[in-house]
Amino acid sequence: MPDLSHERHWRAAGFARIAGIDEAGRGPLAGPVTAAAVVVPEDYEHAILNDSKQLAEKRREALYEEITTDPRIVWASARVEAEEIDRINILRATHLAMARAFEKLDPRPELALIDGRPVKSFPGEHRALVKGDSLSLSIAAASIIAKVERDRIMLAFAECFPGYGFERHKGYGTAAHLEALNRLGPCPIHRKSFAPVAQLELKLDLR
Image (cartoon, rainbow, N blue to C red; front, side, top):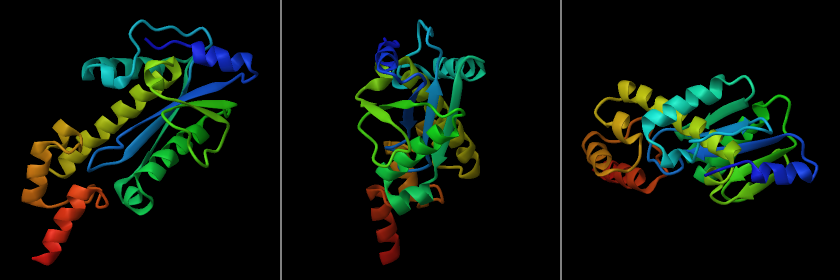
């Protein structure tokens, strides 16, 4: 289970205010990539808070409400839409969403703990932590916010673009999504730079 051992380590090294950062939505064929940055109190503890991928949807939703309404916790979120993902690529878009979330925090943290690999051009001091969402409570909280907000965005898109099943697969490349994509063609929130969508668009252009 995640704890604050990494945060304590870096506080001892002189970084007083530390944020955890994570993202959601790198892999889907549609919709935005989202990111969240979270600063929890130094004495923060939680019995069930974990990597969002390890938790059921109802538990994520409950944790989201708990985290975002806790006056001791400072947090921010950001997103990069499909059109911008296509323009700059998904890796840069993910890094951009993380940077935007971080920059929204006030006051600005002295250090960010980021799930995964180092982030080029990040607008602040940071340390990468592989599988950080299962190690750090700050990152785990960020993973919950990023995941729940993205899921809610996709539920809204499901109403705007019916027939694709966004309310079920949230834009991921499931068999049902690929079948709908072939039947209906891409919609405005599909990532046209992603292979299944790009290949379909090429077929449509050749008809």
